[in-house]
Image (tube, rainbow, N blue to C red):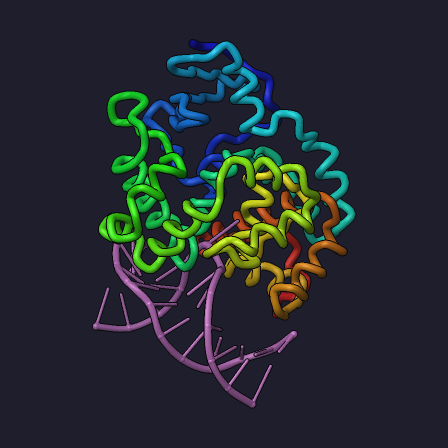
Length: 286
DNA sequence: GCCCAGGAGTGTG
DNA sequence: CACACTCATGGG
């Protein structure tokens, strides 16, 4: 099933490759292949037009893709709000095609529990291995992210053999400690309450809770702080402190779209490590 | 080989 | 509240 969508601005490479989600792969023709809700999806940009191919293809496939890419986010409006922070202004144009994604809540939760203290290639490898071992094959060579009950059934010993390290115990406990009803209830909570609820789960602390609130539950005010974002805040704003201090700083500075500011800074900081380029004002650099 | 990674949990001051 | 320590391991 093939169709086109109007999602703009959109940079597929930044959006699907910046490290907020871990399963998308880019092919030679510049098309991206991934899985949304057990559907195999291919995406390619032709100018302003987004061409999507969904297999096997449900009736609501266009809505599926649009929702995943947060097509309703008004990037212009978001950036006008963030532009009140003069430090971000020089980088906004560069990152306007970087959209947050809306992942499945369980996949997001499990993925970010696995993401603790690991780099992105390794995270992608762990997720790929549990998907091949435990996920349903939806097309030759493509496996869905494993359902919660399949992970619980596997047990921590089998998970450990898939190279998850100490995360195997967290994921195993998590898969037993949550269900669809709980996720459904959490999806109705406002950000702060959702965050407190998430932190109760095994393997979920401050940072993972904010990632899941942002990428899984769509709370745009969430501001996950990992080592990269911590460095960015220190460098750009001269601000250091505990997680709770930096979180308050971000809330007051970036407001209800803090999540977008965070992803811009995260991506910028990693680009800077590789290329030396910084798109933001470095007012506090020596 | 060395260093680092989208940290969390636990114990201590 | 803040630190200090441990956890297990692939990738650059």
